[in-house]
Image 1 (tube, one colour):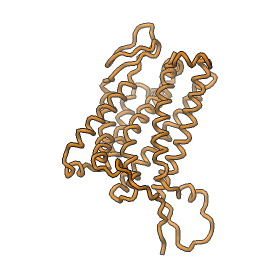
Image 2 (cartoon, one colour; image 1 turned 180 degrees about the horizontal axis):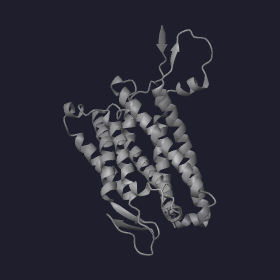
Image 3 (tube, each protein chain N blue to C red; image 1 turned 90 degrees about the horizontal axis):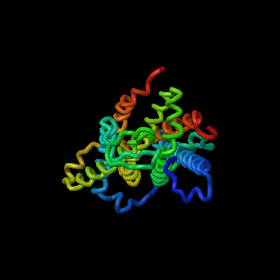
Length: 175
Length: 130
């Protein structure tokens, strides 16, 4: 069960398919987390370097001194792909994860997951304006909105990543 | 005296990125999406219902069928959000620019943040200790 085309089962088992999809979903989520975190740090704590200052910048300074605009397309594409894979996994999750979680009375665990799906969907709706703001990075009119929208999206990705991790611990691989 | 390091790229704006119509569309889309989604979730108005146990789709809301597993409405809420926001965004592009320019850009992040407590409240069934 779960939305799985029959022809795939000619090559790999049902369990293998869902396991691969979950791993790819998780790996792409890590890439998204890294990209949006770099970008959020670059707008929250932009690097201001004293002219003529000596010495190498530390790791934190290097982490936040990225060119934020360079991450925009990657964040948009990764969000959509991670969302699509997550929505696909959800067909399996609903039958094989959620029902046992409810049967065991892990209500809050299920609640934070349901909030994860809401957060991911609302974030999806913010991508067009996020892309527009970053494509007009030299226009000061958008500076404040771009900054806080990026921070909000980063917070959404962190929440979703951590909840996904918790759910996998509760009933993921090998369960 | 200090100088700010410019961490911005010299990205040349594409035609879409320099389009006032796309700006209006994207702003309205971002503001409308959380509102439509929260409304659909709280009123349970999906565009369609998916039954994962039988791989069946029904239009609009459908209850779970006995002995055939649960019904999923999230996909239907998402479809409503995407279609509804796109329609409103397109309609907004027909408004005069002097009106659309007055839409506060901060709403693009304030509205989704404001939607979160509402969605947490909507999930109150799950916040229990038993």
